[in-house]
Length: 281
Ligand SMILES: N[C@@H](CCC[C@H](N)C(=O)O)C(=O)O
Image (cartoon, rainbow, N blue to C red; front, side, top):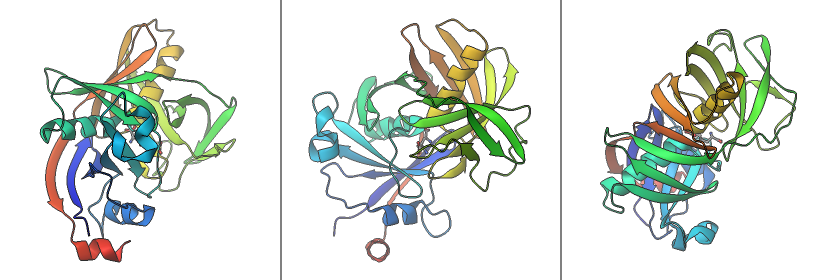
């Protein structure tokens, strides 16, 4: 059996188990991913990042000419998602710390396309997320904590519904997913956003496949682009986005691309007990 090594990391407390699998040898079935991400009986994480060469993974072969590495992102429930803004920054940190890539600028393939990541002089990691899209549907409503709000549907590669609220306590404890109408066929991440000052917002997020998390990079970008339109801001424009786990800095450039910056931290590494892994296959 192939050993299952891991590194633990986080970006503004959106935390991940990074699993190196350069040659694509691991079988990470959804049940095993969910067991690893379990906060009591597993390592605990919001998601898992499998590190595999594009050339070694059939799903990533289309990007093999543009990027060496594919971020195979899984939510804590074991399901896949197209993109993870904090995850890709942690993923890049792992590539550099483990000597698989040089610091500076590098490209990472994701289900949401190839993303360029750069390391800043202050230690932060920035990712070019590409442009936001507003695919609809129109007339989206979100209900949580006994309140109902209109929402804007935003795609950052993955789906988001952004709601401006009067107070971040209004959505309640978010132990249950917010109700979203009309239903998104593949589920949706929901951001609850408040104004904090000029070019500054704060948010809570309920992530598809996870629950409420301390941060969400794609969600912060979705919230920022909606805020910028609400404020009639012209590009380029930069916002600070406060999340429960810290602060992200987001710029919408003149060419429409959205850049996400913030810390990306690795804190531990180890190997899962093969008997435990076998019991959760
Ligand atoms: N936390 C991530 C988003 C992870 C995927 C999301 N839960 C989904 O299902 O789309 C981020 O930092 O962007």
